[in-house]
Amino acid sequence: MNTQLSFSAGMALFGAMFVLAAIPSVSVLAVSARSAASGFTHGALTTLGIVVGDIVFILIAIFGLSLLADRMGQFFVLVKYLGGAYLVWLGLTLLRSKAADAVVEGTVQASLSSSFLSGLFITLGDQKAVLFYFGFFPAFIDLSAVTVLDAAIVMIIASVAIGVVKLAYALVADRSGVLLAGGGSRRIKMAAGVMMMAVGVVLILRA
Image (cartoon, rainbow, N blue to C red):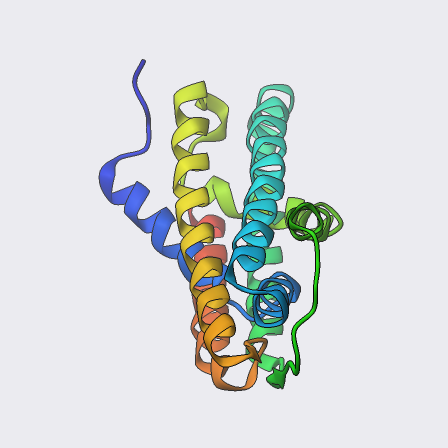
């Protein structure tokens, strides 16, 4: 079974998801809070829950858009335009947003399962993630011809990119006791905003 994802496209997707995963967000706050308050293991399990939740949304986005592409035919280009516009809007929102770091004091006892579930439910509770993936993936993969192997490769890329970034946040938070939710991460947000806008523009032009 062949894949339509070339090495360069796969690396571009990995780089994009790596940067986007580093954006200060609720998930970053959850990982760093668990790690700072209860230890790195809890931050790692929260990360695992986030990755599982993202995989669920990725599968919905890939195969949902594949079904739409089959049903809509040539009119599927409208979905690409909407997705591109949505990404541009998200990028502008990131460029204009502000946040601040926080500090955790003391140690909080929590179960390992609660850390995993908190990451999972935080991700699944963000329905906007599906809209984001709907707009994001068409810039990297032809969803009208997606295969199971394509989906598997995308999930592996996403798992590694998201997992590495969140684990890094967990490690730093465990060592410093700081919730890395903004402030010093302003440059990351600006870079991610510019990149998201660029992906949106590329998607619109390719459509």
